Image 1 (cartoon, helix red, strand yellow):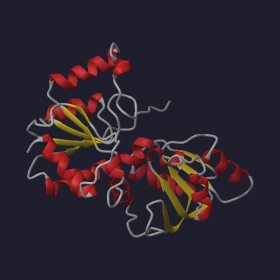
Image 2 (cartoon, rainbow, N blue to C red):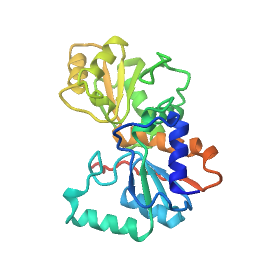
Image 3 (cartoon, rainbow, N blue to C red):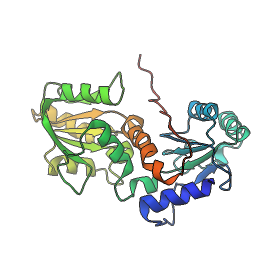
Length: 268
């Protein structure tokens, strides 16, 4: 099976072949006519992920996020950059094809990133609104206990919270990745929290003057509001793990491997 065959089948299964006029889902490196020896799925094609793909003999990496440091993977500004040149050489010398699956992954019949995360959490039957993956109702717990649950499920040692750890909660919002920035509307996360009467928002990225400030002020006013910040990578990596299972029926025996890009931070 060739790279383009894999791409075409993924787009057909996810979106019925529907095509966007503009998309970040591009072939970042390699030849679409190359025969696929193995597929790796990952949140981001970091240098370590590329090295691991090489080690297992896989030559197609399906990444959710950019390879070259900007949303559109523009490389003109990197022409003489030593980090870019070294990474590009590693990829090209080893015949690695990198295809980004981001826009179509989120606009699939069911958002595949959320599907993977919710399966990881075991919350498939806990949606507050059947038409939206953004809000859930769970058994009553505390913010501190919920934070420990996310640390365990997402393999994290440290998690930031806003609000009081001993606050009770059961109505939970989730905005993965950059979704917690508002999807183009800064007001959106706060409106969601208000309109769904959510106790806690689970976030990927944050801006400290929007939802963070809203929740912080609410807590200072004695209101039962909190926020758990797991970060962009940890909130979306489970979707790329789930993608292996999703791909299985359409790639005809091509070896499939999930490689965790891992949280990029060390905490001191």
